[in-house]
Image (cartoon, rainbow, N blue to C red; front, top):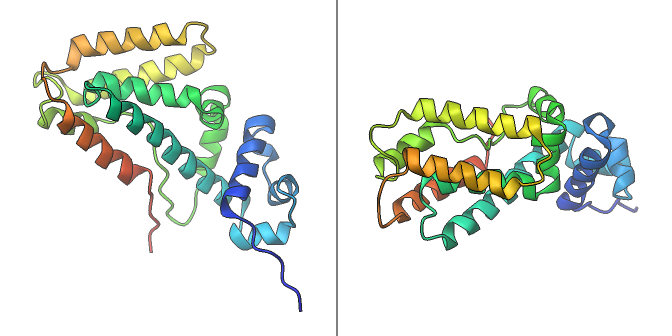
Length: 215
């Protein structure tokens, strides 16, 4: 009796990523994923029962990759624990990765569709700089004490959305540098050691990039 070979998890996610990036969310089915990775639909279904299960895993892996880039940038930056640097590196990561750029800039409806169809209590990470993160940085002395964390989070969300709506940008580096400079002047605390901020971001990113499922 012969058995079908087990398809590598990442091969399936690579296929799903390629379809989303080049053909759009609506083109992703178990059959199209199977065709893209040279397998049978049944073999793919043995790993992911539905196409959206594969896309949730794809999205989770993409966030982990994005956070990996951000962590590397923060780690080698002496000022990396400040909010201005964290936000800038997170935005840069979106534009550096084809799938992330597709989902957050080119075809945001696809991201919304994936999230709306998420089932089984899957928790999908986020790239938004939420007030909770800002408050933690504030407690660690990385953000000025007179700053309203919720207000700053709302402003950053609007900036991120505005960048996406007005993309593509010929001078993205200048835009990011400008946002970083303004944010640094408005909210960053005047500290010599930013390692506490780095530790807070590492913990936050680790928790968000490894979502869990409800039992």
